[in-house]
Image (cartoon, rainbow, N blue to C red; front, side):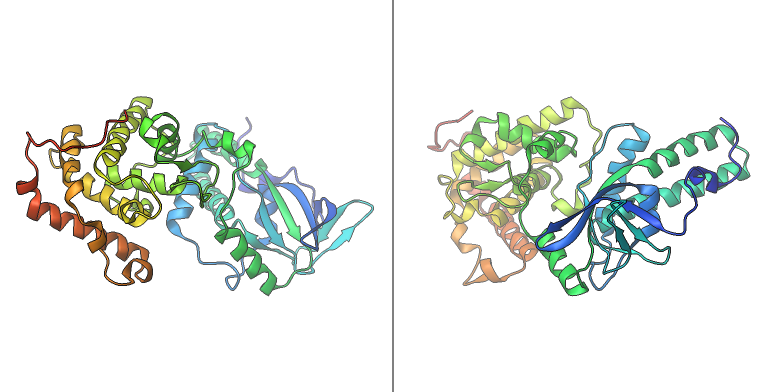
Length: 384
């Protein structure tokens, strides 16, 4: 490969033009004129804008996760998938019906309605690679320059599906953004397949729901990413939260080990331990039912965090310590955790921590009297 003399050479194959052309067929979505198109990131970098009156501020944690995902494509050459990004032209540009393309003047922009974090991840990686390229050039590290050049070319060429609303206003954009991000999302068949390329706890949740006998009674809605249908006890998202609480003692947002790279043995060991845990819940808790407060999501997360603390006291997560601590469960009065309307009015994190402290304090005060190694309860039949 010829030596790279400037970063601009990476985009030199693009023809100069007095406008940016977005090819696409004009259509209607929710009664509004729209254009659907697939564009390379090199073009998107130059035409999108973020209006902070419509968009929320960037969440660093979410951005970091997306950067990790894009790096699967750049570093490990794995195929990656992103849902389409939604833009609003706000009346900018001119649609050429003959050429079937929206033409924007260089000063005109498309405003992001949904996909800000995805675009920011690509932007951040591009800036990082450009900085690395400049340093490599200064140091005359030509092999490294070629490696970075190849990554940048692939990054610029990465295709993104887009939908652009041609003439909606900022108020309509805010409503659309809210609807997209608050409503539960059902997974299509293609996305269900793509979910095999997921983070550690997401894969573990799927394995557990599919293989653990205990999960046949603790039904999990695996077809919805955020919500759940009425006939299910757990949502897919809640199962992931419980696993993180159980094996890390953390809320999902603070998970440390939820990466893309892991050993299959690590995954199978976790699924086995999780199966033991949920089997214990079925043995010692009331029958699973939506009206039972102990099966509510806040108490389930709090209980998993408490069990993590006790099961890791030997130094690492210990199956016998796990089975031992579960014996306290029949004695806990779950209805005493919240007073009055606290279970509905307190912030979610506060409810979880209140339940966690209630269980922990009860265990510290009563476990010596209620549990011994020889203790055996008239528990339900083991479902394993």
